[in-house]
Image 1 (cartoon, one colour):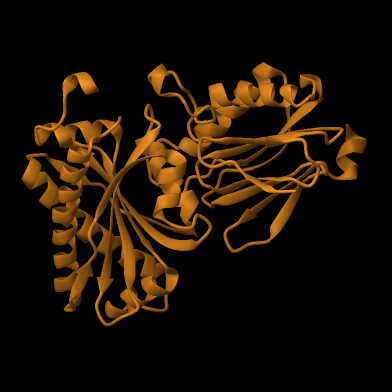
Image 2 (tube, each protein chain N blue to C red):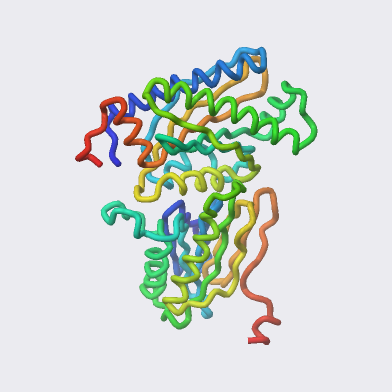
Length: 199
Length: 171
């Protein structure tokens, strides 16, 4: 699965549209402005892909949303625990760890849906989010486990990586979209950027 | 004396006493450590998935990615470092399910099953294992000391090997 610059550019643009829609959803939920950095799209060997997301031993709060339908993927949000607590504070659920995780899963559900809806509309793909799951653990263990489900027959993992910042607060988080290998060709195919013989 | 990383789908090995083989942040992946009774050498694989059969052969450049390929490769690595297969034994760390999801396939458990089956085919015994659950772990193998440890996020480093004296007496 070697991707050309043109293909990566197209994927980056889709990440931009998806995460833009997700950031808008978050801003209206919180009643606060939300910034978005420029998303990156990279196809990397598994080991490098894990490290590209961050320091593997850092403890993070993570929410994963499996996506099924025309395209299989996982949306993964990663927070520093203190930033997750800030976000929960905005929603009035700070303090109770179980409530916090549940609130973060709900945010994951809303943002993940906003992301895949924007992407799906653009590409004509039907996608459904499954119920979100949360974990607090080492970043490496979480990211590697998501990549394991996505990269069965390929040694390269595709990551669409963006981060969102709630303005005026210590609240920033990573937002990853990881399509499985068939998902990558499906996405690019809808954009007319996938050659069958390249598969 | 150095830390040698076995990153996702990679193998690390050494016969230099003082080296430490490290597998950071194992979730559903398995850190498979091979050591020997004379503590001459050690090898560590960071295994991602159970079987290679679904993969295209041209894409399996990462030798440690699949349990069925990684285990024989890791045993060969010990032989290359001068340890006869009969003296090699295994320690397993990882195989967790980071996100508990009803009805989904538990890759961690399948990984452990595949690693154990492949070890049995090679005639390598498992001496210690800390696997399953829903926590990430880091494995460290101290070459020359026969010491293998694991550590969970925010936790202490815990010794798995050398096995307790009581266990040797029982054997």
